[in-house]
Each structure stands twice: as structure tokens, then as C-alpha cells.
Image 1: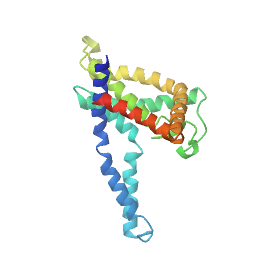
Image 2: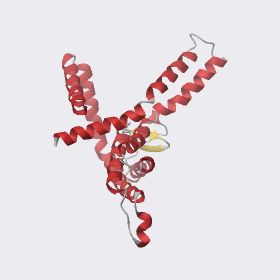
Image 3: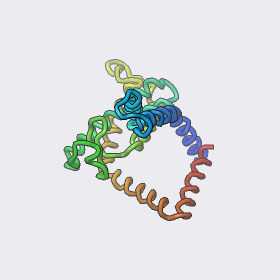
Image 4: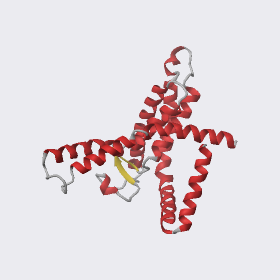
Length: 229
């Protein structure tokens, strides 16, 4: 059992590293553009300043959308075959989640008033890709990416006879994912606020408890690293 868990964490780490490998390039370009648009070095509205602003605004799209990138990256990386189709199903599942969660928040009366992400800061909800959703950050991307890959590996070769043949293979994977995503979108509205508070409490504990917090953080990192070796 322990060996299976360790292998699963290894596969997860290898899949997650694929999108992460692109982030240093994004970071370097953003740092360069921030320097180019720093009025301490260049004149405001100069050609260099405008180029810096343009590059920074362009690269920000990657950092602001890590959740969906992780979802697609995990779906692709964890799929044992038909990786391109797994990535596509991951993307569609992510969009389904946004729409389903937003719709449920509205129908259940849980939607907090706010027209922009800044208006909803600290409320547990946000505006993402035009959808008013529960703010799960990158975690929803990780959850959906793993879910899609697991379903894909089990059913991507499933075939049906006759009129149902069109629903076979990765189309069947998408159908199953759509059902799961619907349940997750509803559960997120009820469960995630408690999880978020727990994460915040743990973060505050480690940042304010001095050596004890550092020790707890170190133990957690050590166990995770040992599991991935």
C-alpha cells in the first residue's frame, strides 16, 4: 500500500513539473519587464517603458491562470496514452466546473455580490475567466487534473456497439468527467470554505509560531520529499 502511494506521488510530481518548467522563463521575462517599466530607471510613457508594460501585461496571463495550466498539464502528464485527448478533456472539464459552480452559487443564493475579483477579495469567492466561482486557487486545477487522468486511464479504450458507438473511448471519459465535475462544483460551495480556513490557520500558525512553525513545515516537506524519492 505504501509503495503504491509513493508511486502515485512520484507520478504526480513528474506530471506537475511539466507546466512548472515554463514558469522560470515567465518569471525572468516579468522581472525584466518590471525593470524596463520602473520609472526610477526610465521615463514614464517612453518607448522602453511602454514595451516593459506590454511584456509584463502579456506574461501576467500565465501567472494568473496557473490553475487551468496545472489542470491541463496533469491531465496530459498522468495519462498513459491518448495524452492529447486527455488534455482536451481536462480543459473542457475545467470550463464545465467554472460554469457549474457559478450556476449553483447563483441558484442556491450563495453568490456574494461583487462584479470584480477585487470586490470579492477575502470572501472565498472570485471572478475567474468571467465566471463568479468559489475561490479554490490552484487546488481546483490539481483536483480536476488528477480526476480526469484517473478516469481517462480507466475508460479511454471503452467501446460500445451499435448506436452507442459514438459515446465510446474518450467521449465516454468526458461523459463521466462531466458527472463528477457537477458533483465537485456543488461540494466546493459547501466544503471549500472550511478547507480554506484550515489552510489559512495552518499557514498563520507556521508563520507566527517561530521555531515550532519552522519545525512543522520542515517535517511536512521532509515526509513529502521522502515519498517522492
